[in-house]
Image 1 (cartoon, rainbow over the protein chains, first blue to last red):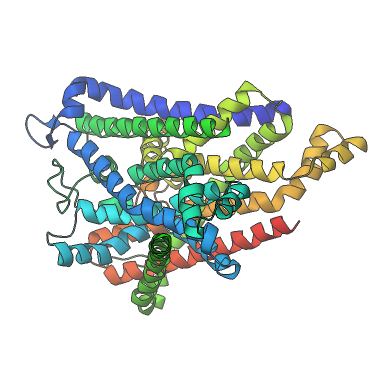
Image 2 (image 1 turned 30 degrees about the horizontal axis):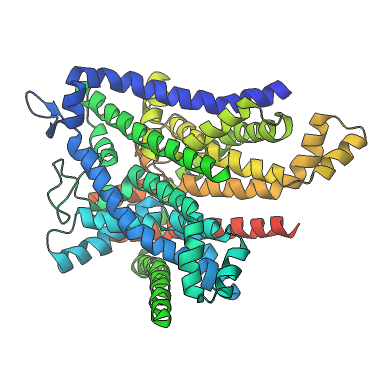
Length: 277
Length: 272
């Protein structure tokens, strides 16, 4: 029976190997055919042209820009909310707000996307001009979507700081706010950084919500009020009708996305290990 | 001076909190107000037509997809967690590797799962766009979640239970199945419910594995769209915005229910 449990446990390793093998085996030949520098740094994505060109540099920049935007919006708000949850929230209110954060995490990404499409797109259009489908809109929406991750992880990091820090700082005459911001937060910084890394992972992998608000033009970023296409959007939008090298190029886009995520995961793992030592 | 800084910092904290929960309230309120009036009985007709975009087939598909995914993922997840907690020796290198891979799996975005499912289940195994391919993909996706929550549930069972069971002469296997697992059930259940939430909300992993056919499935190899996919198709087509709102209401209600149930169960766990 022990061996059955062991076999089940090995399935996880097997699954991740299978995922890598199938993506790499289908993506790498396409990368070779296009040429790796051309694929990664080419600024033109026109799969329909003769000859077709498959440069995903615009999409890489697209993914990076909306992710950075999401961090810019989501991290300060999330972190400050986490501070509230840990140091300001009365007990009764906490019993309502904690499930509310979980609810925020549970809302499906299509629903977020739809909300973005109906509310954020017109909002950005009326306030800043442009047609509303833009880097800015996608950044705000992704910022909202990473809130529960940032709040949850930073709150537990803040709570993990020993009480003596707080009491010691108060005893030295610092106010509640000064203590929280200049003693507790620095002490929790590695946990907070983990929260940011997890948020980045969530933002860069998000697909459906981004498709619905980012405009999806496959061109170099032209300003925060202009549309952009991310790597994830590229795959979903074109996989339905792609064939041959085009299909290979989309799978190769998935490979690059997977490499980004693996890199983020390794960073996360190293951070966590340093925190436990 | 110190007072002023404190005041400014405090107002930042309050403002951020109001923004966070304000957005949540606004989102829920907006969807409910726009969607509830369109929750007509005809939206729950047995069949989907292009005039009446009934969500009923998608609801049935979602239930099927959820059950099938859980049937695949729970045994593997449960057994893995049992191995990690009950059988593996402390400091075992394999355990370290399994934890690492499970964490990596948890971080992979759903579209990558979708691509993998398309390449492996749909094309390589020849299942085509089908419920089977979709739920196989989803079961890989929820596996890390189930492993982690089950692991935590098993770890929270006090060692004295195991020792007492061994002391009464029960073997390892008997102890696991008759003593440890029953006491860990609420924790495991909370994890399973979270997994249901992920399945119900998933879109990107399903479009190219289960497809988007809006009919009741004939068998496990027929293509079927779940409620989330249904909602995505409605909103991207752009002809049925009101019905999309109504679908969003149903999705929100499901998510609310799932969260409440898992909270109630989790509360029971902490009481013990």
